[in-house]
Length: 454
Ligand code: PMP
Image (tube, rainbow, N blue to C red; front, side, top):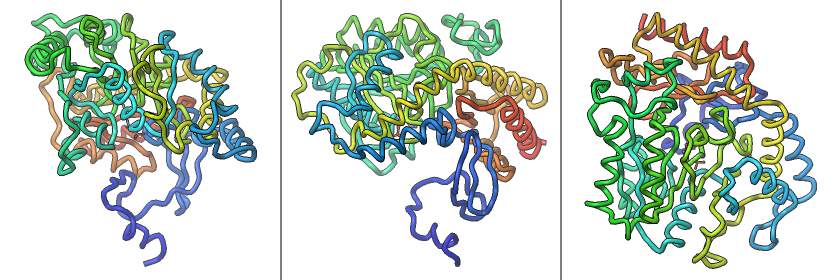
């Protein structure tokens, strides 16, 4: 075997490689929405490094910011200094875009770390232990975050015992929801309030609108008393779990329960944040849902490791200096990359682009739906998914369909991700993806659908 052939023999086989069909694929360079591998192939990237490359691969302004910062100061450890110059600038920019009640920031390196720290902050502040998380959620792979993750069993299988004090509540899964389909765009469930009972199709009460909220209320009565519940942690739009959005009344209901019982609401914006949905934060699409704690990562650094937790002013009360930290947290290079990223998103109109290109993608997918009625289309901004579940519950795809589609896409040089335990494909292109790149993706997808269903 040559060097490339051997590499897989020495890497952990426990990391799934979705772009590998037959032989090893070695990443070489990237620009915008394209990636080149060492075999000379050029790939259209609809995975965005799992929703990370917000400004596209290697945006010149992000590259320049990292290069210039690297020449000045690489490691200004956060326990040594009050802050670094890039952090000062970043705080300013974050204050501008974050919900106004979130005024305190803690920086770290990854989404999982942000979640771990959010849990520590919630427990440390409330002096309560229990955390309510939600079905289909993904919050990370570290021990604590894994215990909150239920999008697939294999993220946790054999890794227990899991962090205690975690209770899992239902999350509305509005597939086949007639009310959603009756909404003005046929795809806009933000405007849809709880389904009428008659609107329910194949799914039972636990998954449809009012049912889950009732279940959370019962959870606080039967399993985790409010006096023992520190926080609820929820993704405003499911990420890894399949890009479903709960009706706004669900999140508002949770907010009310949290306020009523002195429980903190943690909104995990790791995947849905930083412009991904066409607004800075996914939960901004819903009125009346204010976070006490918000986590962010992924898109904030355009690929450079950077993450954080934003909290209300008093949330750190009760937590002593030294209780949080981390050698690399809030690194200067990460902060510099984040500053450049936020500037590019704002100055190059990427929120608008996310909305326009997202609408183009959804429209194209709905056209494909005419030909392949098994496709359910959903999305906001450039967080768009198709589930092979049909629109009315009469069709369902066999296990492995989504994997077959991603494989067919990779064969055609398009990087595409599946999502969740159901048969779902997700699109997470760069927020500056071009119209012709979306057209190209739709054309390739049409071929893949033809191959798998034709
Ligand atoms: N929270 C959410 C909502 C995520 O989507 C992810 C990553 N997919 C994480 C947390 C974990 O982030 P990381 O992989 O950076 O640890």
